[in-house]
Length: 526
Image (cartoon, rainbow, N blue to C red; front, top):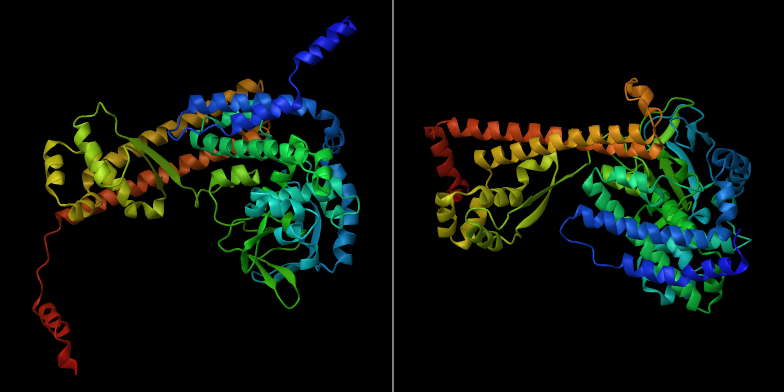
């Protein structure tokens, strides 16, 4: 058994919360490596994660009630549902065509149509009075803070997160209490990922890099506001100082990122719309919300036909799989809005590297470039074609490029050729094999981590994965589908160029010559 002096000594050896927060701020503001470096990024994540874990331990006393709420999330939210519905009705929300409750596929709570709905039909409306907006936050008791703080002034999402914290934990008479109680107590966003889940995400380097950026933002903002509240004398700061923890700030940021909407017809204002934010995502093409100035209400329309008792969903907008993963905490089984970021670099050991570097500079490109690729826009990837032309150029081609004047060089380099597309096709095929191997690696890692018998049927295996693991796997599969589509598009584009090159040039027919002469002499029409 430890003596009192030993316990006291152990306590003194632990760094204080303030020291940990200063260290976190330094680590989170460290320059991010511009050149992708997965080892540095992973080590940086581990340093951040270690500091955050220690901070959470120091703040655990203030987080106890939040942890209790999360024990049986669905039961807690179900118990809060009647009061939330009454609050909506008291404030004139019109949702007679909707019912609220748990939905299938582990999607938490959602909306169901109580009757069949046709595409374009008004589903429900929400009055402006119950919306939490950045405008309302600016005129709330946070106004003194907002006026003097550059982050709260310029970042509406952060302002909304702070507004949520104030109304949930500081204001005992909050008008929005029934709404705040229905919001989940934790999310599947990357801010909540464990070290093992981040290690799994690392299999997709770009997704990991973008997730790490979000992790850094939250860490930096938390450390910044902790210090600000400690040194401020305003009533709002004093109230927030008592309740502010890393876990709570992560909750507020995630609640905003998963539920935020642009105010229709007023796109520079972000807001949280009770009831509307219970709609889960459904595939579509157009956003189906609007705002009516006369009734001062948010309107939500059916984006497609809905059968009676089916889940009512809305299209969240055109986003990539990585954006969905980071900001919404799920990944749809669809890659139509995904972009593949192809990284190409010219090394100093390449043949004629000095001359190629010079051509790249003339073309306003660096020796290391990242090119966003989408199947429908592949034929217009002009900068990519220019980089590849320089990259694969032999002595003869280099001489031709160097002889071109600057005005013509850009046009020559940006023109797709069969040789250029062959290189691109082979490179994409290689990345496709890498993506295929990444999925196999992820599956092996999950089976090992969860002690799953890999010989079972795939459906049985995947039923044992956590929601986060399923999201990461879906992200990797979407990336593979996208690469497969890009490979096919590249191949078709190359064949099209080859076929056009084989066609003999067409001579003008007499009628075409006559038409040309008429068009070139418009005075004849007067």
